[in-house]
Length: 110
Image (cartoon, rainbow, N blue to C red):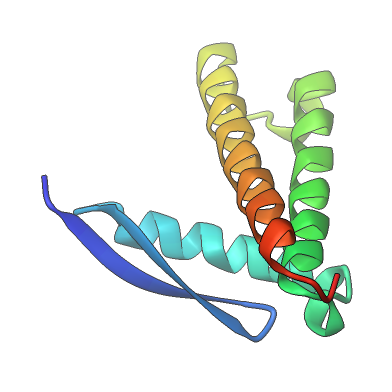
């Protein structure tokens, strides 16, 4: 499948990303989730790496809670679906942290 190009708006900044055809709506929804976390952390005034790091930390905290208390936080999911969801969130968290580390290396304003 060919790639699609999207622009995500996170804490007032625009990020160009690529994804597989058909994943656009999902990636945009994830971008909105990250935007919400970044704004909740007050990241609008932070450097990009720091903003992404804080958003990743907040998402990682939610993932940790899901893993420790899966019945209370995701009652409608069976254990297999819950594990798959946690794996996807974990993968996205790692990608965000990698991007933040990469940007931190090229950003001198952190």
